[in-house]
Amino acid sequence: MTLVRYESADHIATITMDRVASHNALNNALCDELQQAWRRFRDSDDRVAVLASAEEKYFCVGADVRDFPANMWQAVPGLGVELDKPVIAATSGWVVGGGFVLVQMADICVASETTRFVYPEAKIGTTGGGVSSVLARMPHKIAMEFLLVGEELSAERAYQIGFVNRITPPGQHLAAAQELAAKIAGNAPLVVQALKKLARDAMPKGPLETVAEVRRQLDAIKDSEDLKEGARAFSEKRKPRFTGR
Image (tube, rainbow, N blue to C red):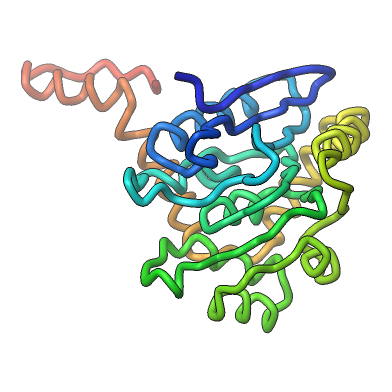
């Protein structure tokens, strides 16, 4: 079953979460497919991505408590897959918990006026820590109220504090995000990528971002052919033939 749709047109990737029956609750399968989508985007000729939901009332309700994802960080753009190309979040309805982290790590957010952001971990009694990066993307005291009180933040308020770039009438957020993406896709790709990378390097990093950077490097080794070859060579008492893959 496909939980994430990847559509490419005019150098724009539209990545759509489509686990509608569960309001895009992030389980292991959805997180795996999101990571695959980000890898495909990274390696493609697409120049900008738009992240959206297949339904209007819910962008994403966060982690699936019945199938809690061990790999949720890998689904987040820029964490699970390092990206030098921009990502635009197109939101409507409820954006909850881990869904908020997806938007937080996007470069731009176009929100329907129906969008409601909420991060309820303090009310639930658990945290994955990924939201800490919001302190680099939202004014400090507003961010702390959002995290510690756990009440919703409207699209209008998010726009006022600079977390949302544009607000649209209901149902027009995706078209507006794709219009903005088309403008970016029409610019010089090398410059866009350089600016994205320079901005990313200048942005203060949260703890999870630092851990994710290390995990990406170590996971590449853990899954490498060289590791398998090294283990075989050791057991066969011969010199390994490494290939760098």
